[in-house]
Amino acid sequence: MDTRLTLRRITKAYPSVVANDSIDLDVLPGEIHSILGENGAGKSTLMKIIYGSVKPDAGQVFWNGREVSIANPAEARKLGIAMVFQHFSLFDTLTVTENIALGLPKDTDLHALSRRIRETAHEYGLALEPERHVHTLSVGECQRVEIVRALLAKPQLLILDEPTSVLTPQAVEKLFHTLRKLASEGCSILYISHKLDEIRALCHRCTVMRGGKVTGICDPTEESAASLSRMMIGSEPPAIKAAERLPGETMLSLRDLWLEKSHPFGTTLEEINLDLHAGEIVGVAGVSGNGQQELLAALSGEDPRAQPEAIMLNGEAIGRMNAARRRKRGLGFVPEERLGRGAVPDLSLAQNILLSHQNKTTIRQGMISFGAIQEIAASIISRFKVKAPGPQATAGSLSGGNLQKYIVGREVMRDPKVLIVAQPTWGVDVGAAAQIRAELVALRDAGCALLVVSEELDELFEISDRLVVMAKGKLSPPIKRSHATVDLIGQWMSGLWDSKGTTSQEAVHA
Image (cartoon, rainbow, N blue to C red; front, side, top):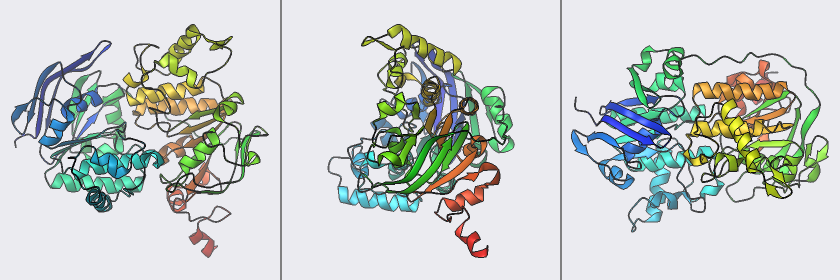
């Protein structure tokens, strides 16, 4: 069978690293082909070369048997190549339809395009509202926009970079159904994911990369998650041992938190009640777009509209305090969006320290201590094994997983009393994910109170002491992890619980 895409000896070097070192790759028509590797292995660079957004230093690209030179993404799209990036390329102030129209001819009818978006989203089970502005969307909803934009092009090759990192299990199943349907119609799919079970369930072949080189090709259906992990990082990540713990003092308390939605497409928070204790992790599960964004904004101080006593931090009313004042009182925060909110892409890692470390060590008599921020940045790079040339590297130059390790490390190094984390291991390889989770558990063991919002149910079950679910702007009663099941949490995601924490169905039979 003729190949859809062939790469021969593709090489791309940057001043501090060889991202791709003489890469060979063959992708067949109708094949779902996984590219597997740890953060910084060179996967995203290789995909950008195929899509024309990065020019290789050497090597050849063949498309349907003919050698091509893909100068830019517009040429890639003309050939029939579409890509969904791990970091989204959306304009916050434009609607979903307007964002998608940017890559289309100027005379595109926006009303007709909006209708096509709605139909495509419905066909593939990816709920979208074309009229919504992007700044009102959650990360999971932004991911749906990127996927639908790619599907509208009816591509011959679809490149997906971490497409399920913030999708719910139900949405993942729908996406897999879509991808299998596309493959059966002859579309080739290049699939990058750190979720080994997904690769085993979906992909026909797997190319493994390490340090910018191809280290092996395998049939993932014949491998276990453990063997794929060993191929990727050389070992299996250590498991976190669960243990029952006695709760400490109440560090964060939410009492009848009501908050009207701040925009027409937002979610109103209704009667949120929760106590978060020292030395515990409370995991927040739920389908994206059910109020998680609004809750995080209310807790971090980005949205200071709550009644003062509705949010209590270590006994002090903080509902109307801004983010800076909350940080000074021991609150730490890791947002779900790495670039733009978690870090400033064009600033160095050292300069990004100042986003959360504004104290007597980093600022002395009104002057920034560049030595201090570089020292903190270097210690984070070392402790969290961040692949970066040094503190002067820009945040935007790091791979997604390495930037995530850096941002989490930056907050952990502050030694907060309360840490709120959104999507802690989004797009992070299995080794780095295990490291981040271990650091969060170690912070808990040191007495910190942690609230972790994640769409990874396995992650929440692994690290949480108690679980709650957000659905339609409401919060379920907490349940001990040892008493929770995936089925029960899945039912709660639809809002099916009563005040005692049982499902409505269970309540009927009680």
